[in-house]
Image (cartoon, rainbow, N blue to C red; front, side, top):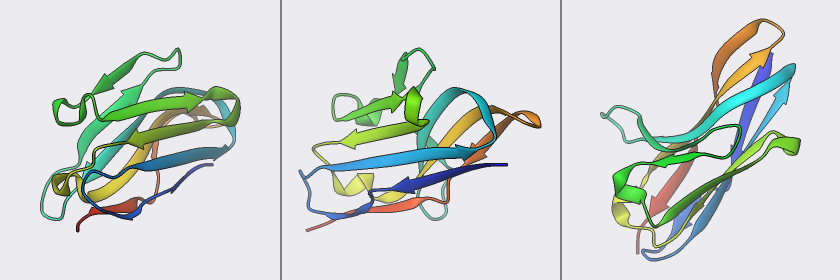
Length: 119
């Protein structure tokens, strides 16, 4: 089994910063793409940022220039540095990963971490 555990969410004022982390553990042979997604109640989960195993990145237009995704392959961990946060960034943030484990390739999700941007 593979587990993804997020940390780093919380309450921050507009213009502030937060750094999210997501560590993968378990029977992992290889991790391909990793990404951060967010969801607001009543809306579909949307991609925020993604990163390949060799470091190529992709961002939603709404976060370009403000958020940075990175990963540490040795630690099976992906990060999301969020700067210049806006109230509209408020959501539950989930990390996802495409993993080759003991049962073959599968997509895994973390439990989510709440990010609230408010004064």
